[in-house]
Length: 174
Image (cartoon, rainbow, N blue to C red):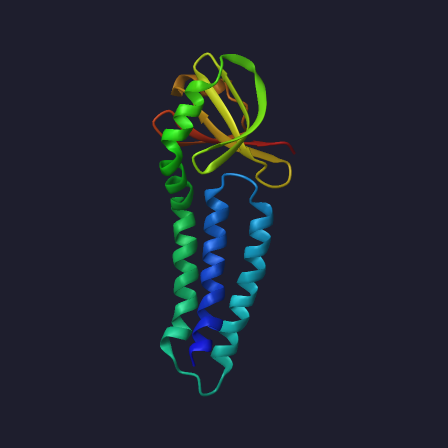
C-alpha cells in the first residue's frame, strides 16, 4: 500500500515543485512549464484511477493531490517563490549592481549573483538593469534597481515592484 502513496502523491508534489521553480527563476520558464504540464497530466491520471477504483477509500490519497496542487498554485498566485528567491539573493544582487561600471551599453558576461544567473547587465545614471533569462519564446526577463522616478528609462514592457528600489522586468519582443 505504500506504493499507492508514492504513485498518487508523488506526481502532484513534483508538479507543485516544478511550477514553483519556474516562478522563482524569473526567466527561462518555458521548458520547466512543459515538464510540469506532463507531470500534471500524470498526476491527474493517477488521481482519476484512484477515484475509479471501486474499493479505494483512502481519504489521504483522494484529497491529497488536489490539496497539494492547490497549495502549489496558491504559492504561485501569491508570487511567493519569486519573492523568496529574491529575498535570499538581494545582498548578492545589490553587491553585484554596485560593482558594475557606469555605462549605457550592455555587458554580456554570464555571472551568478545569489540564486540568479545574470546574462546581461548595465548601469547608467543610478539605474541598474540585469537580465536573468529568456522567459520563454520571445521574452527577456530580469531585475532592475532604480528610483521610482527613473522607471521610464528601463527597457521593459512589464515592470513589477519587488521591494525598495528593486523591480522585476520583462521585455516582450512580439
